Length: 347
Image (spheres, rainbow, N blue to C red):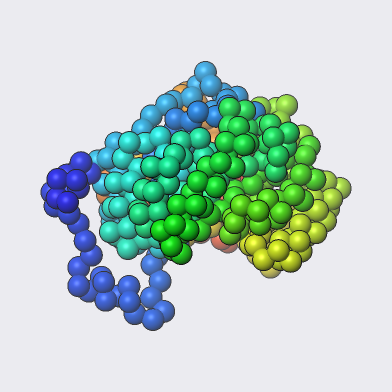
């Protein structure tokens, strides 16, 4: 055990102290961070038509997060309810995925991931079940091969086989702690395809789906696939389809969660919950969300990071005055200029 944690730059296997453990058990105790999203790799076998990994391939920086960088996150892990291992890459490609999950679990976090499914073998399924992860999500843009065609290089039937493999192992091991989800991207040109999602979920035993929209437009010709605030006709049509699909999901007994761009009455802030969440890029940079720290070489006007854990204490970065001002601006205004036109804004 000790040698395993040395890879993370930790002299010994860490663990919460007595008072920290007691605090976690107290009724009403809530950790300061709801979630910590960690980009452990920017490598991906897919060539999705809408992804900056494909559209900006000439600027893409491919890297794996070093274990010692992940180890530097320990103070943040201890203050986070959940750690989600995924960013702009396929997390199961990282050789230390399961060691990272184990360290996050040791910090008392719920741990989850999102995968394309291409590397989910029988052995990988067994390790996922044994790891203590409570959720594995599979990415989709459709409910059949034609609808999922935008995910080039990620065969729809292969995703189904991966889900079936994990489901079978989960049931064999009676792993009731682990839920299987779909992370579904609603593209405007094929929004009707989402109607088939509840039936697919019921057939495969998928517990829940989260439907999102294209919030980062990687090339001008993709603007037609996104839903922009003020695009009332398409938003109204999408809302009608999603409400009907949600009713069908309820009838079939599967979870179905969706959201569309635009303000919510009485709500401000960010759909990414930037006030209580944090994104850690593959190089150790701390950013508000994945959209502000793409792994691109050269200038990026959307780039926003408040420090790097390889050079600074991660808690000091989170509690720094610039980061505090940023979060306050999201909640009460004025928001950072990079956030003002973002479809994740609530108002």
